Length: 152
Image (cartoon, rainbow, N blue to C red; front, side, top):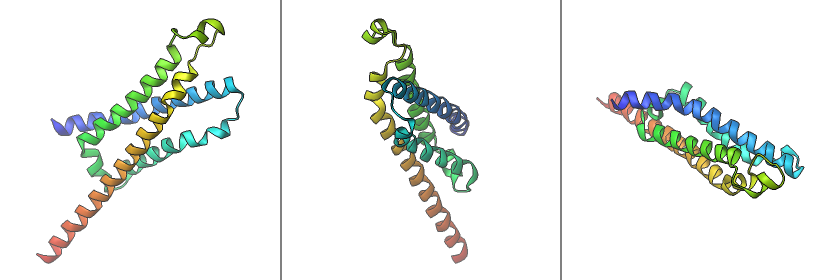
C-alpha cells in the first residue's frame, strides 16, 4: 500500500509542479505588468523553481533517485507544497473581495500574491534541499552496501 501511494503521489507531484509554476508565472506577469516593471527583474523568483525542476529530473533519471521516489514522506511533502502554491495562485486570481477589484477593475490581487511570495520561495528551497539530502543519503547507503559485499 505504501509503495502504491508513493507512486501515485510521485505522479501527481509532476502535474502539481507544472500548475504551481504556471500560476506563479501568471502572478508575476500580472503584478509586474501592473507595476510597469521589467520581467527580467523577477529572475530571483524562478531560481527555486529551476532548482526543484532539476531535482525532479535527477529524481527520474539518476539511479540514486529511486530512494527519493520510494520515500512516501517526501512525495506527500512535495505534493502539499505544490498544492499550497496552487491555492495561493488561485486565491490571488479569483479573489473578488478586494478593494482594487471594484475600484480599478483589476481581476488579480497582487498584494496577496506578493505577501505570500516569500513563503513560496522558502518552501521551494526547503524542498530542493530535502531532495539533495535524500540523494546523498541514498548514495552513502549504496556505497556502504558495496563495501559490505566486498568484505564478505
